[in-house]
Image (cartoon, rainbow, N blue to C red):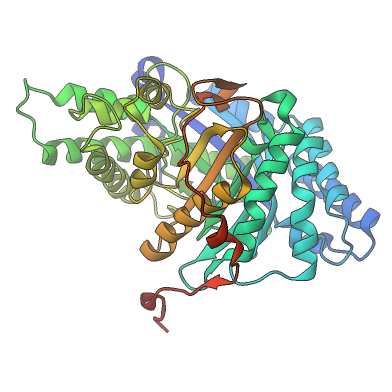
Length: 453
């Protein structure tokens, strides 16, 4: 049992260090909405989302008020629409139904306009993928993700090639809004079925009818805890790791209280707690500042990957002691546009795209919310995705790419999305081409260590 007394200490964290529950995400299965009639399918989807999520925002706000812990976003994730709409082909109609239900119920984002194509593409999935750019341009709150690789299957390079083209098309269709459509689209390797964070959240086919997954966050809390242990320069990295672990435990216990209460009030089962340290553009809520508190002059300098590995591991160790059901991605996010410290490091030349790629070997996800020049070729975007897939597949971890080609802008310019999505300077990509490599297509075989049956 979790008692509210266990989180009294978090009051200080909330007031001074930006502790929050980043999201309550209700995962809803749409399997029973499948129909070969597109209008019927879309209607069932709208009705089900409207019914299940009717009280989501109210419950979230009530709990936040009662326990004094901000709940920033209330979200919904659904069964991949590529599956739900395969029989009818009414993918766009389903997306509009999702968007309408989200807007009417005050839901911040709804994820699951997704496909799992790590081993191959069905005809229906190929048709689905082609709808992504226009769907993201035409909807307000729908988020999309595609899984193109896994440790077990390898990397579907035909799908990777398509992803570069889809990202660029999405950027062009939303160019009047700083290509914001790309901020709602992410490409995965080893995507997980219970991720509460957008844009990658979807309700996996192995999930139940309706579950509540919660993402907790607190980079500011962790940063302050590290700074508090300093005695001159004497505190060693073992002490730092222990401090992060203990702090992650406290943060997760607070999240567990919120998650259990939300599930009870919404009549759903509790799913998982995602331990990820998710930053915001707010001052004092930065993963970069956590790393710098460990002793780095600037995130991006040599030693950054080691510091991030320490942070990620300690967060997981502390979190799993606090909850029996840890899932999602869990660790530390490094989105550039959503992290003030990362933005500052890019602007002063300390943090490059290559260093960010190295950091993704040890963090929760991958290259996240990175703006690149608007004239970047689709093949370069596909190559960036392929590199991240290789890291995920070989290391048996989730990796992802969410890049924003800033149409009409070049290196040093800036994109601004507002809210949690923040804004970011446009970063330089490698000028040399991988087009011939990407155009070969096919499938990169799974690594030898995937054969564990």
